[in-house]
Image (cartoon, rainbow, N blue to C red; front, side, top):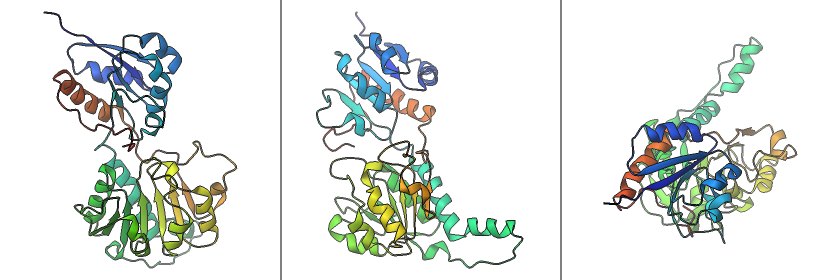
Amino acid sequence: MNVQMNRLLILSAEAAVYQTLVESADLPQLKINIATDAETAGPLLTDCNIILGDPPLVSKVLGQAPALQWVQSSWAGVDSLCRKGQRCDYLLTGAKDVFGPLMSEYMMAYLLMFERQILTMLENQRKKKWLPLGYRPVAEITLGVVGLGSIGKHLAKTARYFGIRVIGLNRSGKACRHVEEVYTEDDCRAFFGQSDYIIVTLPDTPKTRHFINAEKLGLMKSSAVLMSVGRGGTLNEEHLAGALREGIIAAAVLDVFEQEPLPKDSPLWGLPNVYITPHNAATSFPADIAAIFIENYRRFIKTTDLHYVIDFEAGY
């Protein structure tokens, strides 16, 4: 009996780490090659039918893989593989249910930093200044979550654990566990107007591009803090910079940007009420991604539906 051999290309900056993890699962009918860049990948693509890789790298080699059947993304963001005109005659699966806990750590770190005035406390310490500062219990806070996918749902769960009131916004308005009320874009005024913190987890699609703009910012409380952890294209950075300068909102915590690294001439760098991190709120840890691939591969060879299949048109 002939047994079909699947040929996997691991295309990632951390390809060697992924190789070790995948090989440790002793998967059947699988030959593995690795590459860390598109040039090295070229000769390995002719008979490759599966790719596990970083989307920006994978997008460069799609046209060189005639036998391609399935791509497992190593990142949450797959926008580079879903752009109009990009090849889509294969199965694309995403990385989900692994980033929620990491995003929650990030969100709560900054929320508590603001609420307990940690930076002011440190400055007072340097000045040897004994000055008790007031604060509110987080149970009095309303968190607005924009986008209730796997990450948004986990953020809501974490916030509720702390006693924070959570509201959400998505396209359907469908109820969600741990979220008190879910709004649609038609209800933006109510959603943005009552949120003390707003965290944006949207994917980058034509429908979400610059979703956070001057109009939405103008609906927010002047005391509100915006956190952006989804994709950079969902936020109009020019509008945000203006809103922060003019005091339309109080502050912004930004992990993702339209251009990365953030250009040195971006006005966001110089604003005192902006907190910038280099797209590391939730890192793709190879062990987590490899576990998704291994489970999906076992389903693949059994011709069972794979987990986290991406809709190319929707972008998620």
